[in-house]
Length: 395
Image (tube, rainbow, N blue to C red):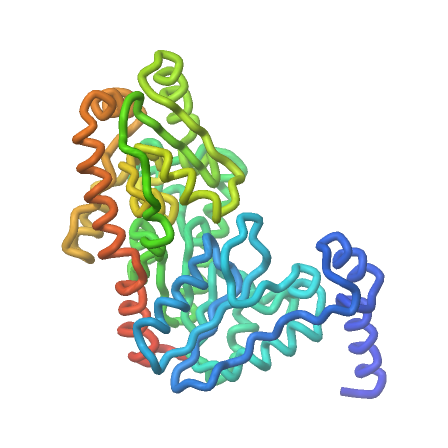
């Protein structure tokens, strides 16, 4: 690079870099970052196999998968970094947005450190090094020369609304601009997967329909964290609905039914939103039933947490997803099937027969211990990627 080019690059970094530029300082102040603070750089531990996952950590899952890998294999050391979560999910390192998006120094330093890992798990098509290389995901991953890269898909990043509508009549996708945008984004990301040829994992079983060559890496919850002592179930039935995204969870189908039953005295109904993650175990310990979702036809972290907490979980699950779970695990998915037409009758039946609630809760807790405690997830990652040495570079 010429001297003029070097000066221009330095000037560009000064403008963009967090600790020194006026825009960067303003962003940092808004985020509560002390002036002069330096961002965390996640370095590879000393281990035969090292895994770095970044940067989404949705529902704390990247952190949970890392811990599961380390429990499963003493020769694997795994780390993750992520942007801050409003729900307080655990991460090995939290990178303030002012650094992640604006600091060229942090971006380049983290890229250099990432090259020291043997494996890199790229989450949800989010460029892991902020605006480096113009936020071009493929260029950033190609820059991890010699590192075995895999993709992890979480949901709307690859879920095509057009296919969801074919799978279930209650899919939460209207014919509007938002749905068209989601379809475009999913198609673009699916094209990235095809071009890369790298291993692909999905966190929920329904996504195997969108990415047939993917492996299902089940979400992870800690059963001990959720299995708190609970009061004996009684009457009326205590029902909770706690949607992370109301539109996706089908709250418009659920809330009117629960409100009507509450007003009639048939149930107690508690709607939860914006609750810190560390408060949820205690709140679920006070519930008998959790209504997860009616719309996507699958299940994820929230349903697993509710099952681990000893709640009977109700939701709409497609026959295809139930069969996938059966084939992959040898177990029946113990989520009680409901849809907008059957939800009220099912709740009335549960309210009248506590033994049904107890059976569903007991089966759910067992299922989570066997399928979602991290052992199966670690096995999938180790067997199909970390130990297999698949596709570290483009063909």
